[in-house]
Length: 303
Image (cartoon, rainbow, N blue to C red; front, side):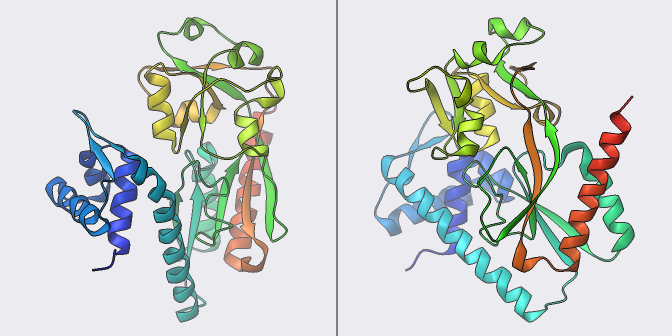
């Protein structure tokens, strides 16, 4: 029996959640059914994918190696299905927007309000991505457009429109000495062990690791994580500190994690991205609404 896409999605969900119970809740399935499904997948593959722990599960070495292959396979199927829908109905009235953690944050309601005024019958949905895709599904063809936070290398076939710059804060455990401070310098922050993403070196990864503010040598990386939830849990557990946009502090508050301003760290560019060859009228109008909402917010913030 071959492995199904459903099984791969379940495998990925359990791996990202670190818990069969939590993954079952996110997938809206019964925990025993998901547990059985994982065991069947392991039997089919002839491998143990997870170690069962007192609280949750963790990937084995074999499971960790197969995880990215599973993600890639599911992405390929998503692209195929999406393209098939487009071929069936080129005028379908829907848009899917990629995001990583907080989307456009405070701008989202205003963007949607403006867009619905122009296209009241169009359905807009949002799809979340982890740290493994800084372009939040845009370059993979999984979404129509996406909100990108941080500096990226812009491919030739991708359009980017800057919306704003987000001030940076440090995410630290609430019992850390930094947590009582009103502000921190980036030099102080990078002297601590860091919790960061699992991306390879490059402008996006290097910015969130604050490489430009570090002395020569390898940074002390306490842990690499694949999602915002993993990242926040690692900070809360006291494994290290990190940096993020200040909007994350508003939309991703977490007991046990304190966010402290880092005013001397250069703000993070926040942009909307889309594929040039897929920029139909709906995409162009959504981008225009995002730009208008961002410009209105900036104007309203001026004295």
